[in-house]
Image (cartoon, rainbow, N blue to C red):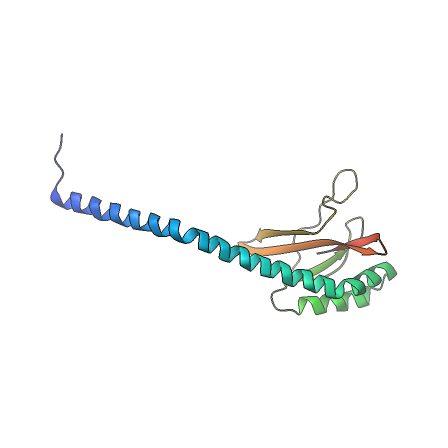
Amino acid sequence: MKIQSLRSRVNIAILAACVAVALFFGLLLYPFESRRRQAGLDKIQLLLTVLYEQNKAALANEVFAGQNLALNQTLISIVSVEGVASAQVYDTDGNLMAAVGDAPPPLTFSPDGGRKAETREFYEHRRNGVAYTVFSTPIEVIGERVGFFR
């Protein structure tokens, strides 16, 4: 058996101590960071929900009446809020009616023609290394679905 030199023993001891300290602080700080990240996502979801709720009546009326110029103005006002990258409105078939800003991937529909999710969706999407949060919800007028907002 080869006897290790004093230099290699010291290097191994230093490396082991560094790994132990990194693991200790990683395990200690992980819960705090995950809670901080979740709090940030909750704030983003609240912002997007409030923006939609403020403009829900206008969006529904403009989609129902086919007022594309007014619809574009409403989307421009939504995108003017800091942190909002884009806003799109789709008809019930998933065809894009109006869009302002950088568009996320298109809406997906199930094979039977229905919407994949019947309720609001909030999820993270990465494109070109940039993380976006996507908020998608149906637009309804008097209980009748007229389109989708994203």
